[in-house]
Image (tube, rainbow, N blue to C red; front, side):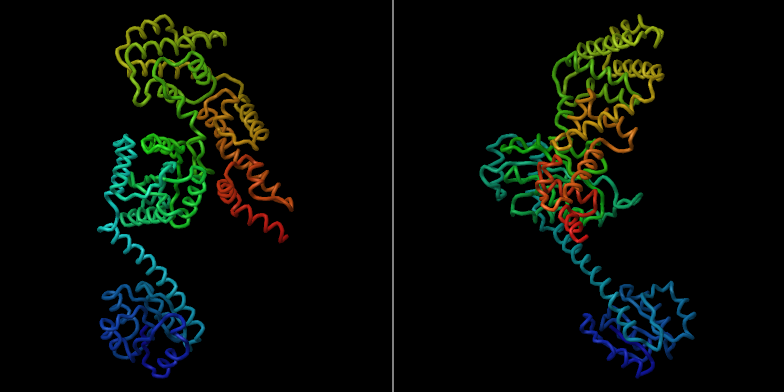
Length: 533
């Protein structure tokens, strides 16, 4: 620190009135005017200059201007008497850090400098971490190892023996007999509304995520891989029973260190390295699902497995499955459901959809729609005015795209004509779902289980529930469970692990994370607060 004042007694008083060393501050120079101080900045490199304003030769404002132009990192604190106050305010655009009135009260000056030291310490810590990150990027990251993991996740290696050979060569300490799971971490949302992270912030986030993952216990049990700018994968090795607790710990630490919304998708566990590409697919499906938006930061593939796998088939789908989907499609509002229905049967990734399949499916779907309309005392002729021509047009279809367009127009038109329905129908469905939650909250029930109970797909039931209630089915399930948990925790002899099981959570750590997200404190903290009352 520099102290600059033309009054010798003021200058020495500032130097001696505070135990600067206790604050981590060293006074490296005292000067009688701004010119003397400026002449010594280059050699002594102060972090802060405490300066009077009114001085001969060079006053404090001119000094601040020169320092700002040449040494913008140096902070300035003005000291002056009341008569200079308006003069000092004109220097606000100079970025002056603080202002202390004379006669100086040592506590006020100490407070100003203490705050400055705290700010600088935090800034320097951030700079140190960023510098460490940059050094890592320049050559210390295990790039070959990470590239190998990335190729594993993308399915470039499928032989167990080849994978083992490469892992040994790269000195990856995977214990024999360990299970494997994959996490996907998605930072799709920016840290602040309308503000994307800068390039350096993106690198800093990458560095921080990888550092956190690498530090997970036990050592060598987790490996981070950056798959895209906002998407990370984590390979977990070890005991399958511990994977959820590890994931909860990872989420907690990342949330503390990075100011950005994110979601973690978790795959099933497998003992086979050759399954890693499939596990990554599972985690990606989980992290990208929209069922659980809002309340659930960790989405296990096991919770959406039925919905994800239902889209995968090789031959023409079963009559019962298509009938259920067509019935649901024509029972509720929402044109988006038409696209979802067609995607399910005509746009399955990796599946072959030849002319025979497409035409057979179109005939099947339209016939089922015709049957359902007849049950409602309606017909294609009434709906579209062209029933005979539909079947002829299906027979003349020349491409899957043409078939999709025909089916879309047909189902969208039918749905438009079915608007005169009981307005309380959706409300009854919502109440039915709430009743199921109230009856089965103490079971490890999923959204798919609830949706099957009302004979709808998980996505469809969730869309209706959210439209009518303003929250997803999963949000309501979590909210209800946490409400019951709060009541149970009021019992003097209640245990957190037992309460977690009583409200349907198999994993206590997962319960604690959900409780804290909804209540603002852990179950143990909540219980302690009740005791203090």
